[in-house]
Amino acid sequence: MTGTPLPDVDAIRALVGHEFPGGTYTIAHWENFLLTACTGADPLPAALAHPVALFHVPILGARTSIAEMFALGQAESDFSIGIESYDWELLRPLEEDLPYHVTGRITEADRVATDKRVYDRIQFQFDLHQPDGRHAARTTITWHYRRNLR
Image (cartoon, rainbow, N blue to C red; front, side, top):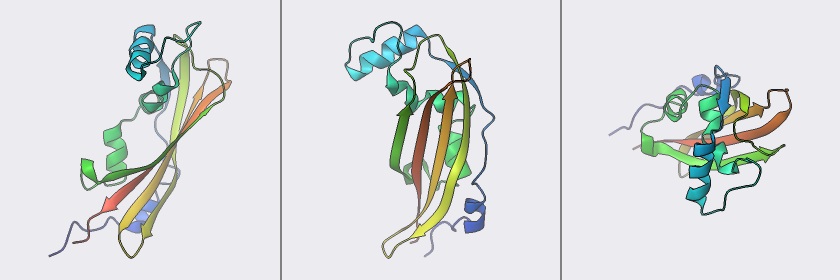
């Protein structure tokens, strides 16, 4: 019995350099309030946004989605994704009501095979810039697309 055929390794490697459309995202006060409350933290002073916004702001601001990111790596199912890391670099405090310009791209993509498993390791990088062009944040998301080799 065989599992789902493996995606072509060259097709996975060719994802490096893929760019998302990009766009802008503004963290609304209500959104920041709810996100901050979900973390159990007190609201931040002076309309500062909680860093937890970096889970979704870069993806939505770059005009992509989790579903598209799964599809690009040819995920076998929603349950076949493993998280290696989420790396957040805050270069400036995030702020409410500021339209961030967001870009995103795939920076690494390759197949990893060990004696126990096979997966494709794909890394996404998103950058947020303030309206004046200053770099505000970078998020680097690395996922494993586990391959079922029954």
